[in-house]
Image 1 (tube, helix red, strand yellow):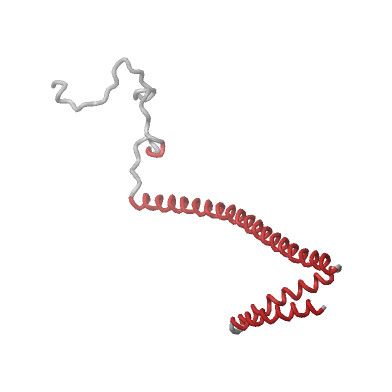
Image 2 (image 1 turned 90 degrees about the vertical axis):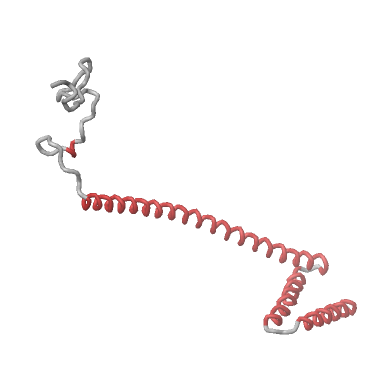
Length: 165
């Protein structure tokens, strides 16, 4: 029998060091889970076992992603709450500034023109009533030309009273 009739075997070269089990020292032994109790290779997992592991792994992956989503939404919600709070503070301060401008202007004009801030308060209230009434009438379904006629009549009466007094 010559060397070509024998099945080929992987035999390390004589110069290669061998490990304790006769394998080359660079070879990686199979993982311990792949060996049975007596060191013999065990059977591969079946399809059902592999599907069970796949389902369990997929469930763990989904649970991890859901946990991450909850954490991200909590942070985003906190940031959104801060942004909404700051926006409301800006709006509130803008309203206060507008009120201060309108009220302060009325008080200043009353003091400057008539010598008393009470006149500024009275004229400011009357001015806002003059703005509110046409808006309310328009909202109630009134005609818009009635607003213009009323404005012209109010200006005429004001100028006549001013000239009289």
